[in-house]
Image (cartoon, rainbow, N blue to C red; front, side, top):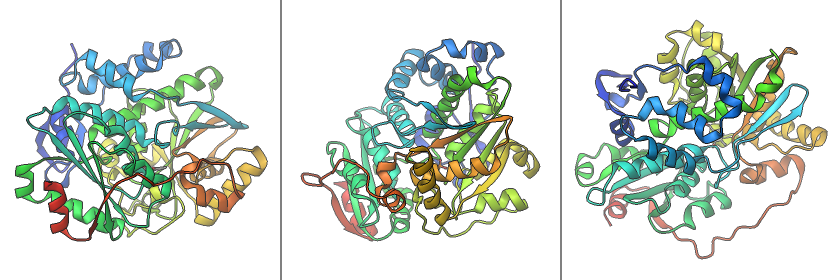
Length: 428
Ligand SMILES: *Cc1c(COP(=O)(O)O)cnc(C)c1O
């Protein structure tokens, strides 16, 4: 019998939720993120057996203790099969450097894992009588993954706000070509405007009385927890080649959901020696690791724009996990890459090794090269397919083959940066 897992609001310890409640709420009161009350450890035997288990068996064992009170084993097995329906391979690049390719999902970014998992959970937790409306602002990747992950999911309507002219044609295609329960909304404004509109909606009591509003960003436990799984899949694949070497994993980071999931996997017993937090010029966490002081900044635009975050939302989860700066630096090394070096890295890795990095993966690769020692095995996460950031990659290596997408037949609603207009769309 597994102990019932409770989720605690970091900013308000008296707010306790089940997995179901935490998923439906997204964010707790006082803007607090939910965290599992304690992190279960897996038996040593699990790690001895891991190479003989299939990926779905691994995912079920890892996730079961977190949600088995709200999702039965059969449903969990079905959700896991649906979520992990594509390859997540580790490839050897050079020397002791490997890459975990997280971009083989339907929208070519790692966010597919969380979005697919969360959509199935939400569908399970809602009914035809009480549909839920997922409202999300995106600068690109989140919208694509959420649109695809939720397309056709029963009892859930999805409204995605994206800024006009700020996302790639490929990303717009991924959001606007699906139809059905997916409603893309183009805002005449910036990403910050989109985000502000969403925040206003979430604090609008009247709206919340009429709609069951859920968020699908990375603070949601149902998006965050399944991301632990691919760290175990990584370990399974390198296990036989480790031969006593210590495992170091570099994670290109923005809101730090991905890295936090890795830290949870380590707490569960996964033998990862160190993580590297790979920042672009948005280096709030990098500065924190170096100085012990956390100073949120405004974000600056870079070519790895899914990491342009000046005040990463999962920082509080990391602090909660370790308690203080010195325990954090025992587990995480700092890494930072400038825009110029990101482009230079894409160019160099392609010309020397024939491997095409996307700008986010390039940041992960570069900091790993800077930190990795001879007696270690290094793996960096390739979080998106280079195709998604074609302009940046072509700036580095020249033209490369890619399919053309057309927005013909796609549909979206266009609004100004105006809450009244958003309300009309939400109520229609
Ligand atoms: C979202 C995203 C990131 C950042 O992930 P976090 O979990 O927010 O740290 C990195 N790379 C790509 C391609 C992304 O889409």
